[in-house]
Amino acid sequence: MKMNKVLAAMAASVVAASALCAMSVTSFAAERDVKYTDSGNSAGTSDDGKLLRANILNQWAQPAVADIPTEDTENPYTGYVKVTFEVSGIGSDSKVKAEGAETDKDLEAFLCGGIADKSRHMGEYENGKIPADEIVKIKGDGEYTVEWKLDEPSATAQILYVQTNIPIFEYGGDLAATSAKIKIKSVKTDDGVEAPSTTSEAAETTTTGSETTTTSSTSTTTTSGTGTTTTKKAGEASAKTGDAGAAVAVAALGLAAATAFAVRKKD
Image (tube, rainbow, N blue to C red; front, side, top):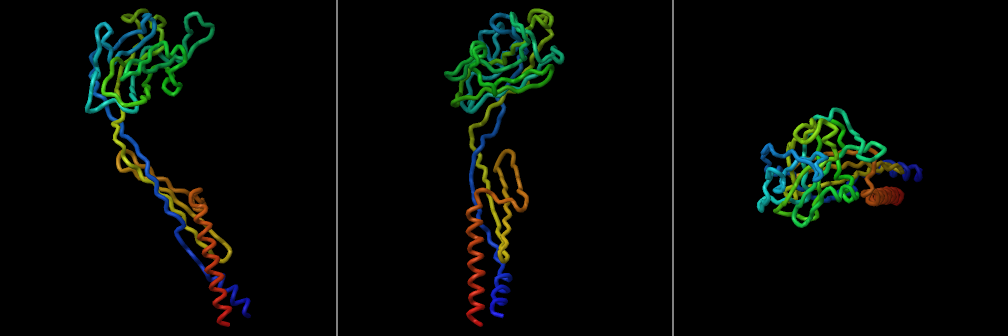
């Protein structure tokens, strides 16, 4: 009889507790437009006159191009410069036979120029010094975005252009005759202002007798920009809440044992 009361007391002991509420704060900078004015003079080529480019800021071009400011102290270039552009006049081509090569080469585009004390041009591309994630594959006519990641902010730019390996003579002749074109759509950078984003994780542990169920949920909110909310399925225990959940389970078992002891003591 006493043992039955002990088991009944343990079975009746139900403990529900919040195991953990962990808060973490990360920061994101918002993307902003760099003031861009289309002068209509962006069409250009590589220095050898063979490969298509679009000038955005280039005082050495003929005519000179200054479609973005050379200096902007109020809105400097910060973590990156990102340019969206449109390619037309090459159809569905994604490869071209490079001069003197036996195999076709992927058509690609990347940003070149000089920002602060950093510069890069065709030589860096040809020597494989431009990171692969900063080179975009051209898959025929369409819209593309290419990015140049910066080591540090700068209020000044000396030169900036979208360079491709599209050979203009494969598409009708020199710059005036070729059908291959690039049109700049936008120039962007981030604003350098960190907007905090808070992530919270909570796990709830319910113990009934010897059975323990742990459920957890994760939610993320951002004070500015785009917010994302994610909820994990019931039964998933966050790696961050595992130890705390176990501690609550142990505490629940301890309470159950104490209850059982009290019942037995009373008898």
